[in-house]
Image (cartoon, rainbow, N blue to C red; front, side):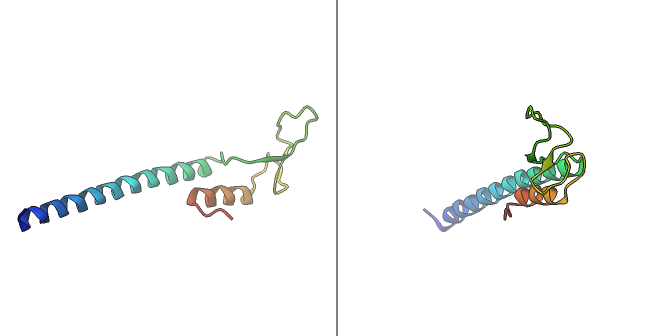
Length: 90
């Protein structure tokens, strides 16, 4: 195998690694954009810690684990969701 062939093989491997990195980054950007869209739309998932109704059906009067009513926003729930999207769970 000539030096030129070795160089071509090496460059092809580098090119594949770079394409894989670009594909991973594109998928990561899509995932983060979806998380940001969820936050911007006000659809951040929240855990119902205190259920108001005795039949267990969720209502706006439930409270999240931070003590905020479900009809109000909870900055702590949003921050937890954002940290999870970033991979920075506490």
